[in-house]
Structures are given as structure tokens and as C-alpha cells.
Length: 198
Image (cartoon, rainbow, N blue to C red; front, side, top):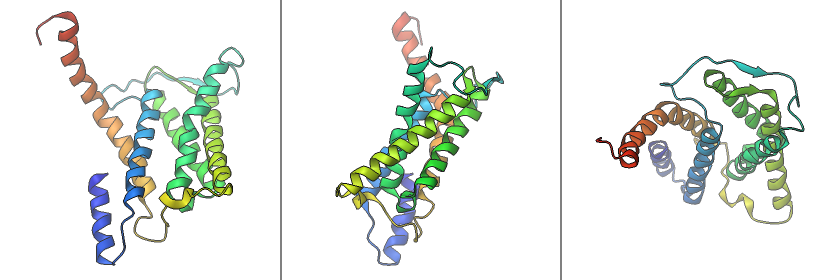
């Protein structure tokens, strides 16, 4: 992302445009939120893929026994629905933001076909609902007169692809580097815990 932003900042200078540094800082927060979502949902890395297709296509099959899980899935995606319109004016559109949250959630559910998690239609529904709730919170704050647009940028310039670059970079990072970092941390932590040689 730093390389991407360096390239975009260079383009800004060429056309005499001022780079919105607070926006860039907020984008890193957004990327961190996406990484947390992928970590919490335990998507597999490319080194530990395993076909284990546990799929539930029946809505609310585990309700009310797993009600807390439904609430957690909603809460997990509220930041996504809030930050998208906060950072990019094109997402100040309810349908566009909802679709983005839906596609992101769908990508997670598809990835979970390749680990020991259950691919669940309820997760998809609740995550999308969380995105919608995040957007509504943004809308209420904006309607209340708060300057929430201070961090957003227009989509009509060369920054247009930034939100999609964020999603792509986060997915690639988690898929490629998560298992490498996990293995490295385990190699360090295991001898410390067990007293065994490294």
C-alpha cells in the first residue's frame, strides 16, 4: 500500500494536486480492519489449503442456539460499512456499499470452503446486515452535521481504484504471508514455551 500511495502521490504532484494525507492515514486503518476481519474469520493461507466443504445453505438453521454468533457477524462488518463511505465519496451510496460488503463476505465464505470452518449463508446475511448498519451509522452522523467528509476523496481522479487496491492487497497479504508469519512466530515461541532448542 505504501508503494501504491507513493505512486499516486507522485501523480498528484505532476498535476499540481495536493495529496490528502489524513485520507491516506485513514486508509491504513481501513486495511487493518480488513485484516482483522480476515483473521477473525480464520481464512486459510495458500500453504494450508484443504478441501473440507461444510456448507449450510439453510437460513437461520442455528438460531436461536447460536444467536451470539449472529450478533458477532453483524458487529464484525459494521466498521466496513462505516469506513467505505467515510473514505470514498462513491460509497456514499447505500446500494454500492452494501454490494461491496456482500462481495467481501462472499469471498470469505468461499475461502472457508478450504479450511475447517463452515461456509454458512447466515454469515453472509449477517455480515451484509452489518455493512448496512455501518452505512446507516455513517449517514446518521453525516446528517447530524458532523464533518465526516473530511477524510473522503472524489472518485473522478487517478485515486479511483484505491478501495479495490485495498481489498486486493489485504487478501494477497493474508493468503501469502499469514502462514509464513505464523510458522515463523511458532518457531520462536515453541522453544520459549517448552524450553526445547530452536
